[in-house]
Image 1 (tube, one colour):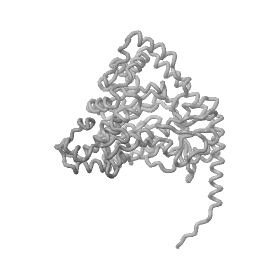
Image 2 (spheres, one colour):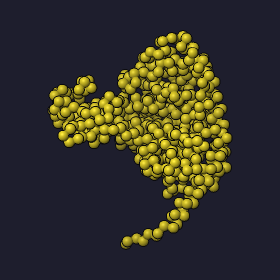
Image 3 (tube, helix red, strand yellow):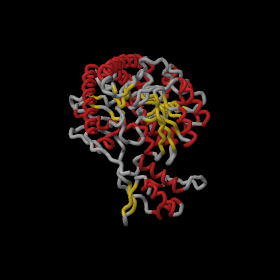
Image 4 (cartoon, one colour):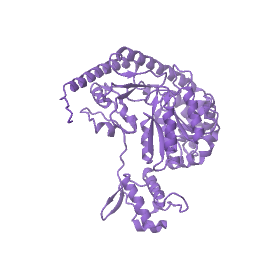
Length: 497
């Protein structure tokens, strides 16, 4: 019962007591404080402890069961359910299992068999990690800070790093202060912390369609209703966005304006300005996930929403996973002043603080100018891969019948098969030929069949890009022909009336 002692219900709140209790127990489960098969307290015992009617407990337990967080055993009580995350393996392997041992793991990470060419992962190849620089700066931090480097940092983050990030952001025309910066353990945690701070059961979140699968999973785990608005080649459909805002009154709007994941599309300047206007008009909080604005190869205007936000409506997320070392789990938020306390509390309950050692090393990266050199190096490497990829697509995909347009930077290319074809099935055929792609179905809130798929250059060496694209084009041509032949040979349908 000690796990429930901290639960306090506000009887003066307009929110029903059973809903308050549902949210608090759900949070204990999501934070791992209540584990699989743990038994919840008997209804009368918990009611007495909290000073509420037994119907409050019954309704809260009923909602927890409906949402899959608990299950009942007749005569024994109510128990915490087994956790089932909607990862790529759930979505794809249950529906399209492969004979080969290709495993798709949590959070979109893919185990790649030997001799496979992977266009699926957006994680950089390990030879690009700045290991030698890191080793030098790590030793410098250890010599300077001794044991202090291993202590807990304040939850908001190592203060000298936040100072360095203020200067770093100024180079991107984002003017902020140290108190507005929250250090996080990667962009995924940023989304999770924001969700914990603002999203309650049945709240509405507006997202682009398609969008980052990790964000979809996080918002769903909070019990949110997700409203998808299509993204066009110059950004989200503004008219539909405003209609959705008026209709659903969302708690948050989650966007990736530069080199969006998965499409690679970037918002026009006009649409970026319109987003800020809508935020002001409807008093919205916009969550901007700055996925890859650093890698702009052929686009001059890659301004962030945060750089034009004069009213404090944008929560800015920045991670260094795609251009540094993803295993360090390091990123930051830039926050409107009015929400500091909520984010700080949510971060503290997540993991108290991000690794102090990593923060101290990265602080030196920024202050010594090594980071700037590393960015220039990564831009050079990725631009080479980007240009080769573009050339190969033009060479091999023009006769395949698929639709695409080229992004002006970033790591991802987005394709559509002809109407009626399923990219999940193409994923299977490509994998059988030792090519990994990422089917588009995982990027939509409703994971139905999709004719779209994503290719990324992050984990493919230049020498393998042409080999992989040539083989993939052959797979696509055979796949389309095979499916077309099946349709031609199908029994004709005769209307009943």
